[in-house]
Length: 378
Image 1: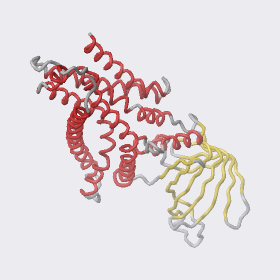
Image 2: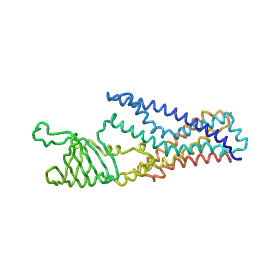
Image 3: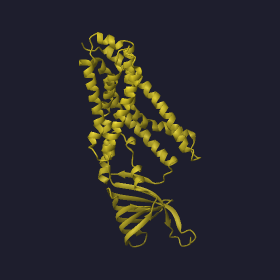
């Protein structure tokens, strides 16, 4: 007997409603805690209004929401199956000749559709919000003045500096504030050697002062060290020197953290950005793991529904509600720990990227499938 469209629509609708209600409740709780934390951080700066803090909390929600999605899929499926079992609806369906797979199919299909939507729609929209949040965080909370970006042409960096003044009449103020724009075509990892470097000097009024070309550059403690340089100034012949030093407050960790985080990158833009990082010389393994993890979301959501069915489809008189909840929480955190652990191994080159991203979803799916086959066929 094939499942009817009416029954499929009923099961799918019931699950979607429970999923949206649970996801909304979880996001509301997370928003409350995130806002409290942002208020604590903003209290160190008197010029940050509360409206901006509330806005930043909303902008951060998509990042947390995508982490919570598998939990919401799991717990809402458990609640849905518990409801159907408690009201004897699943018993009536089974008595009508339907198998477990027939009434699981509509709910599993909803999970797969939500996984595809999360990958192709929710993630790109959330990336815009997360990118805006990180920009506000750098400007208002971290007060970072350095700007770093990576394009196909290489690494670009803007840094505020103090420049020696060429104005002889101003003898009491021989330093003026300004900034440099540094461009490197390649970055050799892990030594962090920048190749074919160009440094442009400007005042705060955007007046060009000089240009320095260097064959290589290295970032050391509190300074840039440039080798084999050529200095170009207005109305003077280029001067060559073996080395040149420039003070800086940047560290290698600052440069790594300034790159676009995986959460702020749209699913559709990730492949091109990964290619750009690799062409420049940076390690893009973390982004690759994140990209493959997004691809595995439909399979992961389907696996969460199978696992939920395996622990919640008990007879209504078994009085095992607490055990069901405890088992579901344990499964959720076990999957989360396994996923985080394998992704960390993948990002550190301990295991292949595909294994790190797809293994949690595949293991969960096969485990849920095996349990359901045992329940159905004995």
